[in-house]
Amino acid sequence: MGDVCNTSTGNKNTQDKTDDGIYPFYVRSQTVERINSWTFDGEAILTAGDGVGVGKVFHHTYGKIGVHQRVYILSDFKCDANYLFHFFSSKFYNRVKRMSAKNSVDSVRKEMITDMPLSLPCCQEQIKIGYMLSILDERIATQNKIIEDLKKLKCAIIEKLYSEIQGKEYLYGQLFEVVNKRNKQMEYSNILSASQEKGMVNRDDLNLDIQFERSNINTYKIVRAGDYVIHLRSFQGGFAFSDKLGVCSPAYTILRPNCLLEYGYLSYYFTSHRFIKSLIIVTYGIRDGRSINIEEWLNMKVIIPSKEYQLHTLKILRSIEGKIENEETYTICLSNQKQYLLNQMFI
Image (cartoon, rainbow, N blue to C red):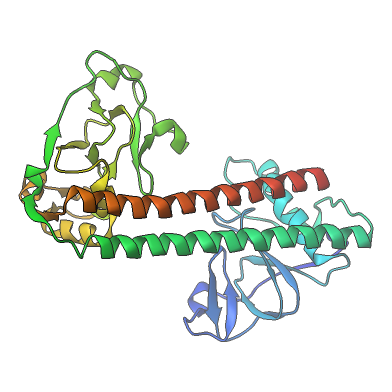
């Protein structure tokens, strides 16, 4: 690659950033900061020189920019920059992994970039490939913005629907039973874990390397579809709703709703900002040692509307969720299409 571009590094430090700076400031992450002085002026490809972003963080920029001293700047291109950006960003991580003695890559040496072999078709072909992949990137970025906006809309609607309620006041203890049935007969083997957005999910789907003794699964608690789970991070993420049958950690508290609640009605409220804020008065401890006093929470009050209103609320929110899922599926299809093209073009 040293034959088709110049490679240098930036000259700024993280503390040089300022929130209302004149120029974009590229550090070692995907987040673009602001700065009042510039390092480089022109078209450039940037990549992190060390840290967790090595081989993963890339930017294609134009004009005056500030650049961190541990970010590499590729410039003065003798080939199509769009083409080079996509080739480099799709191949560089595997290269630095191969050249690193450890499992993780701590830093990038200049020759890792300049000595990297490059497949280079004719100029016209480079332009076509670079343009097509850039169009895909723009569409994926648009999709991500659509999803982000829909999620914000969903949060706003949740706050509104659960704050303007006419109904009857109950204690949570009148709506839920705390259940502690264990998996003593080893009836269930699928372990559920709490996730921030999806509620209770199969632990295998989280791709986490969690070590545990399979023989201890008989001590796990049984979770049924429709249950709510208070987990170790509930003080900051709310309660997790389960739409599946399985077992969960003995450290979790399982709440089983009675007939006053429609299936899943409080699942949205229990992850809302309003509800999480209400947990402050029943949360004790500091930092990661914080926990919710279940008995005190069960004595807190909540207004529950009619079954008709509950169903109306669920219909609205599930409709938005369906829209978000459709957009996420389309985004995955676009990403898969891009990856297929990268694999075919950059062999």
